[in-house]
Image (cartoon, rainbow, N blue to C red; front, side, top):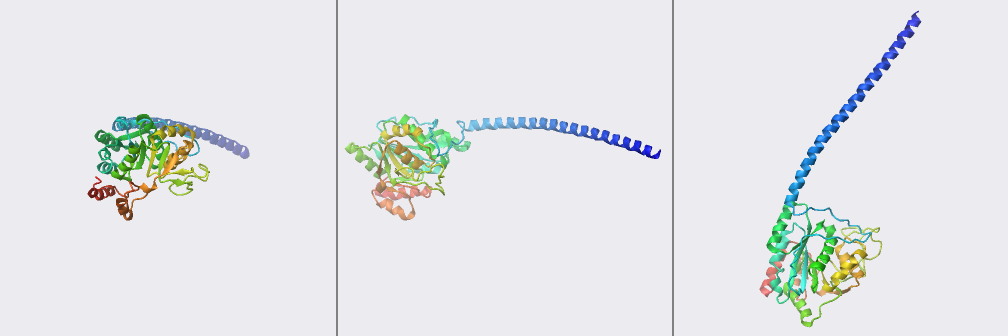
Length: 355
């Protein structure tokens, strides 16, 4: 009897355990479902509020910016690239007076207001080149900073010499996109220009010497054609490390092109611009602007290179300042170290009647 009773009690105890197991499991499942449902509802509320805030933020940004800022374009060197341009600031009347003997493109970052101010107050004055027609424009890409964009719009209202391409963001790695933009703008708005002169906003142009150099072509009716003009580098090779690194898998060749010129300053004959534009979709993209435009692209367009190194001081330093002032062949100095260098250099030239 005792044994039978023990068996019955053990059986009942097991059944109770099984029942409690199912009850607890059901409770756990209901808890999970409730938590999940509540979490989803909470997420939906938060997400909805986030969407509203994002919409308001975007609307405020659109008010502060005159256009939508797009992402940066691809910088891969492994394939060709034909860039679409969208000039949100076009300055279309820059070359309305014909002929334009030289169009100086100054590559500048959006926030470099002081540099542009220094340039306008020193060498970038068309009156210094009379009777030649020389124009100056500042090439700027887009910025995500609404305050800076507003200041750029005010700057454009005041001076009317800014060209802004809205298809890419302004960055050192996007300089090739800016160079392509320069070519395409010129091909649309300044087709009859004799010479295109690309410089950076940390370069300095000696107005009088540059004017005299241009005047020789005008006097002899011998403007350069089918040409890239600058300090010519022979067989420029890729850097595999450092600031100008281009990986082997992007550019396996031992050189970029037979010849190229440094980006601090080079000139392009006006007739070569449409040839360069036509060659853009035929060559591989290269993020190094000078090697791309004056090397790869110019080679594809069958342009000739004319060495102009006697007129170009590649790097302006304290120990070379006197050289630039005294050497009458030099009309371009590259890589000024500070905004005030332009003013100081200009002050040294004024007593020499180079104002």
